[in-house]
Image (cartoon, rainbow, N blue to C red):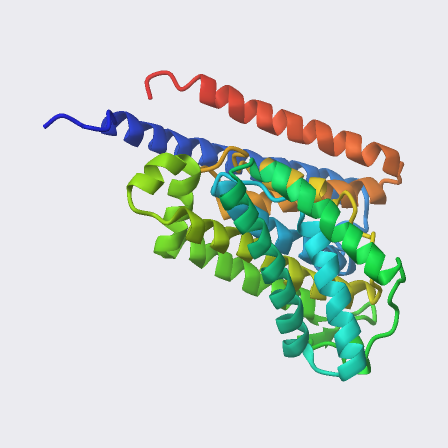
Length: 340
């Protein structure tokens, strides 16, 4: 029987297999790069492999990793969200204001921040779906709108006051090391682990995860297959907003300060980590493993440059070069899929 839609199923299957193989090679390359850099830093900086440095690194990059999990799903769907720094700060600011005034606990804090972020994410989804404008334009616009409203309503006032219970969060499996400091599964680490597990299960073990990949691969084909584009976009951008709120609690717990403009420009750092992990900015291709490797590489690079005493002015240059090289290698592999 003729294929009425003109699909070459063999070609599609071959392309899919090639993409999977390419992603595996990219992840192996990332892991190898991380190993080489880590080995170099271990020999040049005695502090790099210390428990204190590794522990601080995980805690400090928990927020970035949580946001990267959300952005990973948005990119897979074929969209992009630039507004999440504003959603993070708004969720954080409102959450801290409310728990200081009315009290609460960590479940309440996460529910407040996550709910506010979810609402803002759903606004993005509706605008993207109804206006039929590229998501990057929509989310750049909402980034400025959200930030502008926050600065106007807050008058740029920083928040420093926190309830005592918020300053002393849970610590599971804690122990005191030889250096005299306490270590264990802190709130940022626990939240990070839960986020990674939920995101991984969502994208690999559920039908909605497969639908998100299909949406990013070909939105028109996904629509013809009966997928609701609106529902998928509501889920994708809502999840990004929800994780933005969760990340806001984590950052607030880490620094115990809320500055309305503290995350300006942070969207590029998170985007760099996700793209570095091999996720396509045009959708349909990428893995959470690659995203996590991208975050690890970015974290190790920044940490290593600090430990080596290299000026912060060079950090962006070095990281930018690594990203360009990574994307170039991936693009080169795609252009040379001879025989696939």
